[in-house]
Amino acid sequence: MGAVVISIDAALGWGFHVDPPADRPTDRIARSRWGWTQLAETLETYDIPATWAVVGHLFEEECAGAHVGHPSPPGWFAHERGDDPMDEQYRYAPALLDDLVGSELDHDIGTLTYSHVEFDDATEALAHAECDRAIEAAETAGVDVDSFVFPRNQVGHREVLAEAGVRCYRGTRPEPATDSPYSAPLRKLARATVVREPPPLVEPEVDEYGLVNVPASLSLFGVEGPAQRLLAATVGDPAVRQAKLGVDAAASGEGLCHLCLCPSDLTTEADLSRFRAVCAHIDSVRAETDLTVETMRSVADHVATPDTAA
Ligand SMILES: [Zn+2]
Image (cartoon, rainbow, N blue to C red; front, side, top):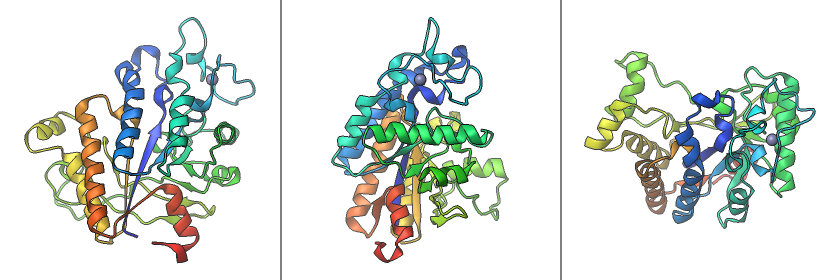
């Protein structure tokens, strides 16, 4: 399968709600709805469907933070209560979701749990509640959930996903080959800066619970820092170069290039330019080769019924 998948971790304020209010990245939260709409418009422009893993609470129309019976730790919904709750526009987003559901693109609307719970240290009861409530909120909006992304990529409780009816999830990025002349920290920087190697391409596979694991290849905003900003200003954006190499490798039939990002990664025009450059490249390579654009759901379909694979 020579294909590209883009998956988007759509959390708005929920990505940061357990941070103490003073530590929350207020600029990123304030730009997250802008980032969301820019992502959606760019995907429309280039005719690229994506997997949108959405925090289930964003489907809600209103909420005072009661969440009776939810087995969350004390204070989990504290940002919705009291005199100074987090602004509603970062806690629910039914209009943004309506636009995705109504898009002519065949977006795959999946889940990022109900309230952005990390599953590696969640209790089984909490994992169940987060899956069930997320799926219920989506179904109320007419969305069938097949795809699951673990908040902060903390994989856990996969058996709970299977019981809830999820079909596929985004696993962690494979470790790159270790025969590099660089030490591990240097390798991470070198991959994004000087080394002309594509990110790891991935092969989806069925796990022991019958779920299809569609691992990530590259986080488009995963390596940021002064070195990256300097390079972007001088020799071009290293993240774009990495992504293009991955798309080109997938186009040569070597596997699946799975790119991921969050709406809150986009806070500036430069961030948007990065995403646009990657989408433009996917679109042009798709026109010239057998490369296909898939979603996690369509990948799961191919894995489940391989005879119909492209
Ligand atoms: Zn709530």
